[in-house]
Every structure is written in C-alpha cells, then in structure tokens.
Image: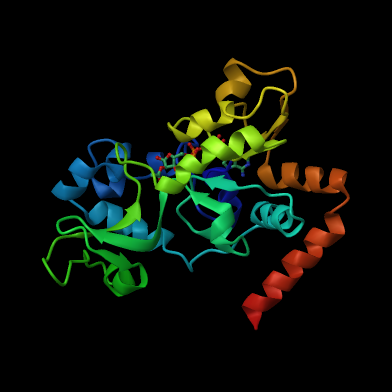
Amino acid sequence: MVGAGISTPSGIPDFRSPGSGLYSNLEQYDLPYPEAIFELQFFFHNPKPFFALAKELYPGNYRPNLAHYFLRLLHDKGLLLRLYTQNIDGLERAGIPASKLVEAHGTFASATCTVCRRSFPGEEFRVDVMADRVPRCPICTGIIKPDIIFFGEQLPQRFFLYMADFPMADLLIIIGTSLEVEPFASLSEASRRSVPRVLINRELVGPFAWSPRHNDVAQLGDIIGGVEMLVKALGWTEEIEDLVQRETNKDVL
Ligand code: OAD
C-alpha cells in the first residue's frame, strides 16, 4: 500500500505534511478549505483549481524514484501480489503492469463527461488542460472530469480485489501514507494477524500508532533511506542500482 510520500522524492508534494504538503499551499486557488479541491460540489461551482492542479500533476512531468523501483523489483521477482496506490501521478505504471496495480483514487489516463457520462481517453483533453482550458464534452458540452476519485465518490471496482488479495498476502508493506483517508486506510487492517506489516514512513500512522500488532515493523524516517535499508537487508542493492540505471538510460535515449 502506498501514498503520496513515495512521490515526494520525485518532487511532487504530498497532501498533509505541514508546510510542504499540498493542503497547506492552495492559497492561490481561493478555496473555502483545502479538501474542496477534491469535492464535486466545489468542482461544479469552480473547476479551475482542480484543473490547475491537474496540469501540475499531469503524467509526464515527473520521474519515478527508488521507492517506485523497489516496487517494480518486487514485481520482477514475482513477489508482488498487488500494489494498492492512492497516488494519481501514475508513477507506479513505470514497469508494473495494470493487472498488478490498483489505482484506488483513480487516474488521469481516462476521463468522463460529468453530464452525459461518456468516457474519453486522458490524452484527448491533455491539450485543454495544458492551455488552462476546462475540457468540455464534444457531444453535450458538459465538463469532462479526469477519472480521479473525489471525496464521496465510489472507488473503482478494482479496489474490491482487496477482499481476495489481503487474506492471501504473507507480507504487507505500507510506504508513504498518513492512512487518514477511508476506505483505503482500513486496508491496513485487512491482512491476516499472523502476517507482518512493514511501515516505511516519516512518522507512525494509522494502526501502527493506535493499535499496533506484536509483529508490526516500522522503519521511521526518510522513505528513500528506509527503502535503501530494506533493499540492502535483502541483498538487492546491486540489482536495484542496475534497474535504476537501465530505466534512466531508457529516458535519455
Ligand atoms: P498524505 O499527505 O496524507 O501522507 C503522506 C505521508 O507520507 C505522511 O505521513 C508523510 O509524513 C509521509 N512522507 C512524505 N514524504 C516523505 C518522505 N520523503 N519520507 C518519509 N515520509 C514521507 O498522503 P496520502 O496518505 O497519500 O486523495 O493521502 C491520501 C489521500 O488524501 C490522497 O490520495 C488524496 C488526498 O485527499 C486524492 O487524491 C483523491
């Protein structure tokens, strides 16, 4: 399970870190309160703040970091049952196939007209977002909203894979999330009690803070440092360095 913390080393702010988090830096959007940026009622009143954020977060602007490559390595080794992410930056897609990924809070890869519910590929409205235009449906002129899950909206069907996945997992790794947003946060309680849960995060969060299990493990501090330590303990340091090198070369070519 991952959250915005795995993308801060890529330069994307998280939401709740005091000072640097997105929710403390939205003054320029003139929102009644920070979370309004992900609320439908406010979106229909004024969609511009959300699209300004969408422009910033649009896939293509940022690069995966060591935490993403660690997840990719788990997959390459056949150890990843599923990756549940709350992130909407799409950085997990670098090398992890869609079948292994649950993008619980949606994606910019597709969008839906808020009036006629027609679906569009994300690419189709990219030009509008980049030009600071609110994308409109070519059929009914309704506002087109990227398929990001707003507060109160239903999570994607794939989220419910957790009901089969979590009882099967024999290790639960949680990285870079405050575990404050439901229903995602409660997944941290869905693994079997005999199964260790490993948290890599700046501070203790969710059940690690208020109802820890005897076999919980927390590596507190910077995520990159925490991942490096785990990778070293696994003896994968060289392998991950090779992977990062290969992927970086791909970008340059
Ligand atoms: P938060 O911003 O709530 O939490 C990020 C967590 O990562 C915090 O505990 C930080 O301390 C930690 N963190 C950040 N950078 C770190 C670093 N470099 N090293 C160590 N720890 C670090 O983000 P999420 O839990 O992902 O909804 O937020 C959940 C949801 O709230 C988001 O998906 C978003 C928002 O409303 C939508 O986008 C729809």
